[in-house]
Image: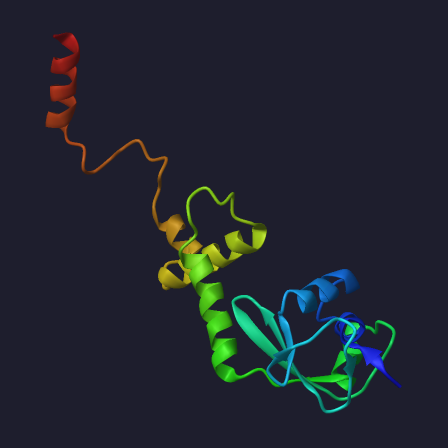
Length: 160
């Protein structure tokens, strides 16, 4: 059985559509053995495929061939992710950098960004929780820091 590389990349859910997989092959983002491949190149069991999805290059070993797209739970039966640790660390650094260094004008944060920012600030102010707010009576009219002299100064200023 022979399977085209673009079809295998689509069937194993590396790319969302077969057209995107074909374009990636044409643009030189997919390599086998260090050489660029055409979309029609057949895949063999044991091939190591490198897929460049900026900022990193994923590496997969072909365990089995398939023609049709399979569910996400079945994908590990057909490929093994052998991406190097330094590439995965680079991906994590990019994720962190994207969160911390959001450039102005890139749009409003997503819900996920908002949750991550809230979690980050909650961690930054550990030890201070919502129960601390109950210790202060914010509606109290009597302010111990506001003295009678301050009150008289305010009245004199208003009469002038």
